Image (cartoon, rainbow, N blue to C red; front, side, top):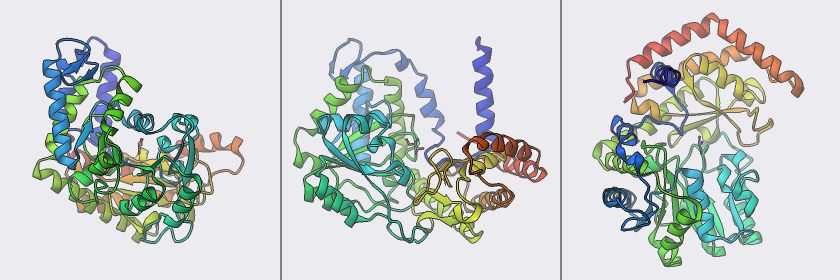
Length: 442
Ligand code: DSN
């Protein structure tokens, strides 16, 4: 490469990915074919519009690519309509608002601090700025027990009171299966569109290890790069139930994506989505999805046996949400994230239900198994990873989040220096690296 600076950074990122273990549940390793297609000549093309209805010439092969991606997605998820053009998950969700609501309409979604997503109506998101949003949370009691944490009576009450036009179901930090039927009963009672954001669990649904929302919701959005293991991108689907409610939904969704929100689709991304969908349609993908869940359950059990408190009592999908409050005190997520990063285990700090700290200094950590499972790590490796996490949590017991905000920056900088020098951290780093190098990334 002529640009030595970028070349160096690419090499460093490659080394980081190879020598560490990725536990952020929304990340994965796309196949080498997906990565190859992203740099194909499709990167050079403009193709505003939809197959056979483009604004520019030279789109005969782009059309074929987009049709293939659409047909594969329809087959994989058993839906009658798919749009594969959204640049990523947030624009896909915004397109759903544009297709179904008018500015100022009431919409409902799970609060970000309760595991929802910014685009489900958080007040700093365009979705919370242009629409009147009602947010629902999780149950307050028994959050460490293995039980459905949604309070359907509360959600029903809110829906009846505020009459939303659109309701979202789907989360970024919920470790159990979704009961889409119960959400559908509520949405149907108030005549709302029900949209499932399955970004986190799309690969699990495709692999048959998580219930599908298709029979219950009108619209489905998903990113393509999480458990689905494709390139960064997104799709919007309409179900038969959606068509029955509104025959014009596909057209409304298409118009919302282009020209409503976006310009030309990223054709190299569409081609890579088509490849990822091809991969997800192979029998081996079912095995992959099942192993993600097995790995997550084993890892959860090790953490639980080690005394940690898990939201939802464990994991039924690909992710685990640990509440560190009873173990380390409030606001310790950032300490765990930083210390684990130092040993090569990458995960993220996260708010937990009944959070007593703030989103910037949350009390939990979120971790998951899609990426490690792609590297073919199995139960044995999950036990190893769980033990390393427990050892790091022990080290953290002598630290706390200062009450006074102005003391936090200095305290954490000092903590980082101490952790860097800690001999046990150095030993754990070497152990994680040794294991990681035995499991190549695609
Ligand atoms: N950033 C994604 C996640 O980590 O869950 C959601 O958009």
